[in-house]
Each structure stands twice: as C-alpha cells, then as structure tokens.
Amino acid sequence: MDILSSLFTNIGQTNSWTLGIGVGATLFLYWTRNGLARLFVRLGMKENTAKIIARTGPVLAVITSTLLVAFMGLEGQGVKIVGDIPKGLPPIALPTFDLGLWTSLLGSSLIIAIIGFVESVSVAQTLAAKKRQRIEPDQELIGLGAANIAASLSGGYPVTGGFARSAVNFDAGAETPAAGAFTALGILVAALFLTPLLYFLPIATLAATIIVAVLTLVDIKSIKEAWSYSKSDFTAMIATILLTLFVGVEAGVIAGVVISIALLLYRSSRPHYAIVGQVRDSEHFRNVDRHDVITNAQTLTIRIDESLYFANAHRMESEIYMHALNALKLKHVILMCSAVNHIDFSALESLHAINLRLKDAGLKLHLSEVKGPVMDRLKKSHLLEDLTGQVFLSQHDAIQTLCGNAFGQELEFTL
Image (cartoon, helix red, strand yellow):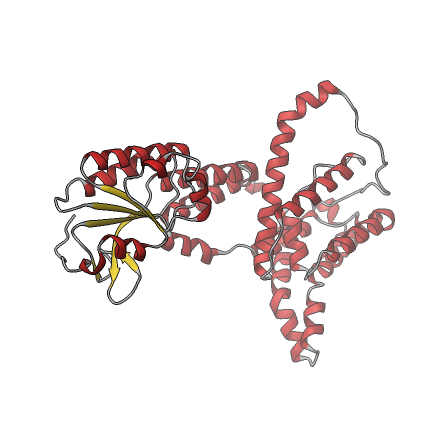
C-alpha cells in the first residue's frame, strides 16, 4: 500500500530515462522467453541450443543497459544505479553472546524463523510442482538452519528461500540443487573481481528481471478454478494475495494460515453425514439421496464422513437423535465409521451418551468398518464393553447379521 501511495503521489517526478530502461528491459526479457528461441530455430539453430542461448536474456539486458548508462552518462540524468558494491568476502566471526540482546530479539527471531520456513516451503512446492517433483519439508528446514548458522558467522541476513530470487533462478533453467552451488560460485567470483563492472547497472533493469521472472509463477487460472470449486478456499486465497501485495509477505502468510485453520475448524465442526442403503445386487452402501438403494425400516445406518472430536461431537449426537428417535419401527442404529480416522475423548463421551440414550429408547447401537488405529484406542475405553450392539468388520456383515434375507423387503423406510 505504501508503494502504491508513493507511486501515485510522485508520478509527476517520473524520470523518462529510467522509465524507458525499465519498460524496454521488461519487454525485451518477456520477448526472450519465447520469441528469441523461435527466432534462432528459424535461423537454423537446434531447438535445445536455441533455448539455452535464449535463457541468457537477463545477462544481455544487464550488459546492454549497463553500457548504455555508462557511455551516455545517464547517471547525471537521474537514472538510479547500483553504484559502489563492497569488494571481497565478509569476515568470519562469532556472533555476540549477549543474553540481553538475545532475549530482546527472541520474539522477532521466532516470527522470522516461522515466516522464513513457510515462505521457503511455499516457494519450493510451487516450483517443484512445475517440474512434477516433490520436496521434503524436513530437509528444507535442515538446509535453512544450516544456512542461517553460516550467515550468523559471517554477519549475513536471515536466510530464506526468497520468492523473487528463486523465480529468477528457475526462469534461468535451473534443474538440480547443483544450480545453487554454481550460483554461489558465481557470486563468489563476482564479489572478488566483478563488482567494479556493475557500478553503472541501472536498478530498473534489476527490477525488470525480477518482475518478468515472478510473473511466470502467477497462475490466474488457479484463482478462477478456486472460485468455481470452493468459495471459502477462494476467500482464503484472495485474502492472502491482497495482504501480501498491500501489506507484506508476513501479513499475507499469517493471514493465509489463520484463515485456513479457521476454515478447517469450521468444516470439521459441521461434518458431512449420510443415511446409507445397499446398492442393489452388490455389497456397496451409498447415500440414499444420491443412489438407488434398498433400506430396511428396522435398521438405520449413518455414515460419518469426518474424524470425531470436541468441535463436532455435539452435532453428531443431535443428528443421530433426530433420525433414530423418530422412527417407530427402528431397532438398530449402525454408525458406519469408514471415514473416521480419529476419535478424541470428547467424542468418546458423546458415543457413550448416544449408546445410553438409544438403550433407554430400546435401540441397539452398532459400529461398522472401524479402522485399526481407531479400534486400538476404543479398546482402551469402556465403550466396547458397554456397547449395546456389536462391532462389525464391514457394513455388509452388519446388515447380513442384523437383517439377513429380510433386508430390503420393507422399502417404505422414512426418516
């Protein structure tokens, strides 16, 4: 927001030479991404060779704009340049061991570490997806930690996987981690010998290089798909994008994390459930509202499509009571747990309460398709001992045991 405000406030002070260099470099770099390689191919060059040469576009832009500024004296015309760059390598020294300083920086350093890790992993996943590769967040964390330790010994800034720098590296054709090693070697050579040659490099050219590289990672199609697929996910995405643009990366990442957690809690607190019946001539059970299935008035099967915990336990109770206690012919209630990956203590207490209330109503509670890890935890409680019904390996076993051949004879089952 400050950048946009400053842009509109000072637009009258635009330097025409700087604007021309920036726009020209941007258009040139954008053209070299596709047009330059095709031009070389038409001139008879092999496609792979043409693509490699086309990737030198940023180098050509840097050299051309630097020479232009140097020979035309554009520095005196108001063009901002890089200027003097310190030559040599930073000294190796231990950081200051000041307890008071460390204490005062603890909060800020923790935020920097979290944001740095989240940003680095996000960038890595974005770039890996474009190459159909995968990353290991644990290894990324180890790498960041080692790099930050090295930076602390040389007076460097906190190290993260920067979006702009990573985009430039990716755009240059980096394929393996060796690209990072060669980049470090190039920086070493430049820091020792080439800094005087970069004196007249215009800052506008550097900005153009980053802008063109970053624009390749902007995926408008994903935003449109998010809008069509899920309005809540679209809201989280747009909030993250806008806050990143107008406030900063830290605010955008934090907002994205907070909104995502809030959406997760909201969705899991309102679990999807379905009354299921048996698909004709099969052992499959599906939602009665979506498929042509058969049911039985004496048996009610409710499939819970979410892990059960404190936030959705009460809703589960309400849904079961609403359907079970109003069916006069009902004798058995089966909870189909094929989608339940975890049951916390609050949900366990709710299951106890459901079991007792159904028992008072003359109904038996059964469980089916309970996953192994969930069953291991249930065995440590009293639920299985107090359960009025049984635990079945599959929903088909439950129906065969409780109804036998009578299942499907009474098709007037209503809820």
